[in-house]
Image 1 (cartoon, one colour):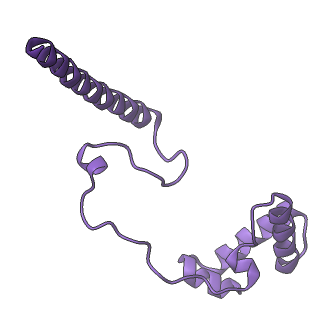
Image 2 (tube, helix red, strand yellow):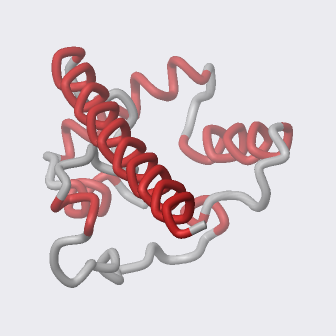
Amino acid sequence: MTSKEIAQQTGLAPQTVDTYLKVALARLDVTNRRDAARKLVAWELSQKSGSPSAAVAGEPPSSDPPPQTGGKTWHTLLGLPPVGGALHDLTWARKTYLALRVAFISAAGLSAVTLVIAGLFWTLSEIG
């Protein structure tokens, strides 16, 4: 893709794209985009991560929007932490809060199951 095409898809200025490309090419120790793509394909093959990415293989990027869940799910209703997303996108305070919340909900669920089982044993011992 040209810098203008990349700029249109990312919302950046073409000059910004060129700046990022210069830095990337220098870090990869290559002189052009084609060599950078070849280096990426070689690295992907060495990692045995499957086939090369769609952009390198020449396939057009998918314009389909990501699938949407229709409404609130049980984990959002309970206030559990999000599933997936960017790696390390939460602050330490937020991570700690969410971990404690999950621990509390888990302890409450385990207590409820324990009480139900104890109630069943008590009921069965009274009958027999």
